[in-house]
Every structure is written in structure tokens, then in C-alpha cells.
Length: 267
Image (cartoon, rainbow, N blue to C red; front, side, top):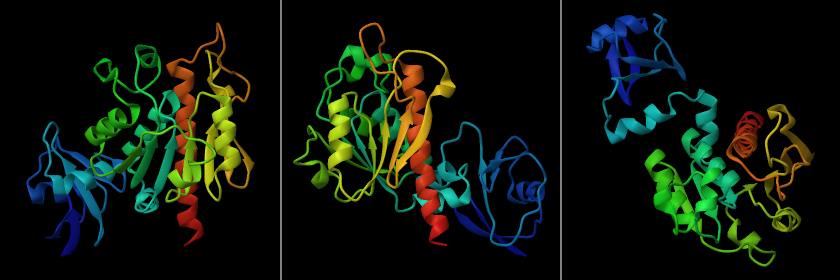
């Protein structure tokens, strides 16, 4: 007899493989099986204390089970790293809206979304909003979108223009901040004034071109820059979804890497 956590419920089972467990619990072969973050159809051996997710295609699970199912595709150490993670996002345009959604999908515990602006039609070529969001504040619109993606993420919003007088206060409870401004002066302001935080910033993702030119570089102990460091937006060289998106995903990935390394370093 083994104790296996199945869809968030501890069960006493006789099975010693995934296939036998499916049969014992009355699931058919069409069910999606997720074991240790990996979707598999293989008849793998299971051990006492394991956690297994079975998902019937097209079926909406109970709220109690939904959170575990959403996290099931992460590696176990990722979920540990995200349990108490608090990340701020400064600027909710093409970079910020994409970074925030990526972090919400992976399951970051708390996000703070900060922007002063409203959504206009010119934003829709690269930002994660909809035509129906035009005229709304980016903070409230993005919070609503995230709630539809992952309702288990705690989202705090502040509709404010960040400057040297308020930036430390705004992010005082968030130890990692994604700098996602379009304006170079605002980028410099945040990096120069935000104290005792880890900053993952961006510079150089305008236009189109080689994807592999966009990289992540550690510039200082607590400062990372994503981008090609040269492709600024200008007349004839606009900001577009593909390169902005690549850069945003590198920012989100770097933040995840920082969170995981903290767990590893702390044992």
C-alpha cells in the first residue's frame, strides 16, 4: 500500500506504476498524466509520497485542484522558488505586460504592476492587451488579464508615474524589479535610484533582426540587462512584438533563474 497524492488528494493505493494507478482510480487511457512536471504516457514506477496529476481533456477541475494542476508542469524546485516570490514590474508596455504574464503563468506568488498610462490603439502591435481594453489604465487591464490566466497570483497595482522621489517607496516590499520602460531616461532613473533591489532591465530590442543578438548580461552584482544594447526605437525603427517579446521572455527567464538560485543557495 502506498500513499500517493492524486489531484491534490492523498490516496492509499495498491498500484506501483502510473498505468496501474490510472486503472485503479478509474481513469481511462485518454487522460493527461503529469508526473514530476512531465506529461507522459509511459508506465513509470511510482513511489510512496509521489504526486500525480490526471487531467480529463476539456474538463474544468475543482478550484482546490486547479492550482496544483497549473503548477504540475513546473519542475518541483521551481514551485518551491515561487512560493514566496515577490516581483515588481515597472512599466506595462510591450516588455512589462509580457514579463508579468509570463511570471503569472509560471506561478510567481506576488506581482506589483506599476504604470501611469492608458491603453491606446498604437500599443496593440506589441503589448498584451485587447481592442476592448483601449482607454483603460494598463494597471487595471493587465490585472484583469492575469486574473483570467492564474487567479492564484496576488496582484498589487499602482497607477502612478515613477520617479526618483517615489520609486523606492513603491517597490519597498518587492526584492526583484523588472525595468520595462520605453524611455531611456526612465530606465536610468530606476537603475540609479532603486536601492537594495535586484533589477532585471532591458536595452535594445527595437525593429527586426537576428533573435540571437538579444542576450542577457550581468552588468553588476544585482543588475542584469536583456537586449542587444544597441537597437533603440527611432524614426523608421519601431518597436514590434517579435523582438520585444524575445527580450521580455529573457527578462522573465532571468528572474526565474534568480529565484531558483536563491532556493539552491539556501539549501
